[in-house]
Image 1 (cartoon, rainbow, N blue to C red):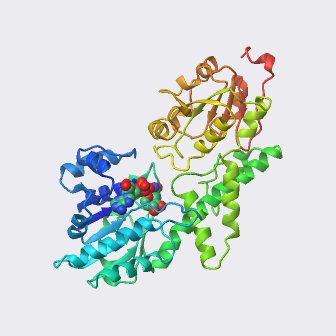
Image 2: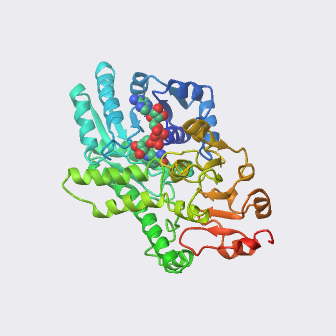
Image 3: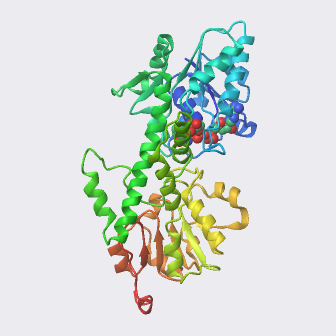
Length: 450
Ligand code: NAD
């Protein structure tokens, strides 16, 4: 099939590349001319495991092209995907201007082409209920040619995006048009050969499903963070509680790891957008309001622990920060909890030397010389008063603790992701503070003896 994907970001590039990989001819359109030029020269603009191989293979096979020309993309394709940003607006709702603007232009382009045949415009962006209707109306104002608008929310996770796209647990297609359903089914069938379902539903249900799924996951994380904070106060160990809960198959083991809150380009904005859409429909999501508040607090949960260790004053202290991306295996720093913590530490006069395996350049662009940047995890530690861990990259899980102790000024680690066992840290002679577990404090006179 001939496919165009408008918006070549984390979702659009993976979508376009994976559709090319299953034999379709794909044009990825983006408004960012620099990005398009780089992709045309064979440079991949994001870090996403496994994507680069597919990207090069499909460019070489002439199945994957890049362009800034929307008209070329629309004229070329039978199915046009919108993978455009829907960022948070000032009032917390989803900003639909990117989607609606492109939809209007697509209507004009279809109308202007006398040879235009039936087209499907598929919305892959996360959008509030009713958007498919709005897009249809907008396009219909420009053209009366045969077309359908479909809602096809995307569930891929950054860091696993290629796997998630190639082997989705389910595909959701929201449309009442039989013709569109059939074409969409044919397009997605190669990705669900092991039997995972392609779920057909109406547009509105598809739109809400995406927000409901993300909000539920954000709520699950947040619930566990609340339990962790309580367990810590009550002298318990959240790791034990997590395992005790997770072995109940009704609850499940995943998304129960406490930490310094959820972040990223999806959960924060999607929870807020669902809350706001609820209000628009005269429905108050009380639960989501609490999720938003608790998560905001959680992002800074390590700060009082750090301040208390340094007797209430961290001004002039030097900290090493490991992990900046909002989660491991991505260079995406949008709404990363690490950055909220960094802002707070800077406000309090601390100096920070940061390290991340993939996100350092994105952070450098945002913070410039407000931070120092380390080229290795150990370099960040030199002369630091303490180590702070904010993202659970695998490379941080089994470090050389002797080396850490040799480089840090004080043997102290503030771990926002519970990477190490408190008992082990005690044996190793570290003061160790984590989330929902008892702190390890070594008397100062013993610091040198370990
Ligand atoms: P992104 O910011 O990474 O990419 C968006 C791209 O659209 C950018 O390359 C931008 O230059 C381009 N763009 C903006 N305006 C344009 C225009 N007028 N014409 C052509 N291109 C234009 O965004 P993303 O993370 O890929 O997210 C896209 C949508 O998918 C959002 O609604 C998001 O909520 C949703 N989503 C994201 C993820 C994820 O993990 N990132 C997962 C599922 C769903």
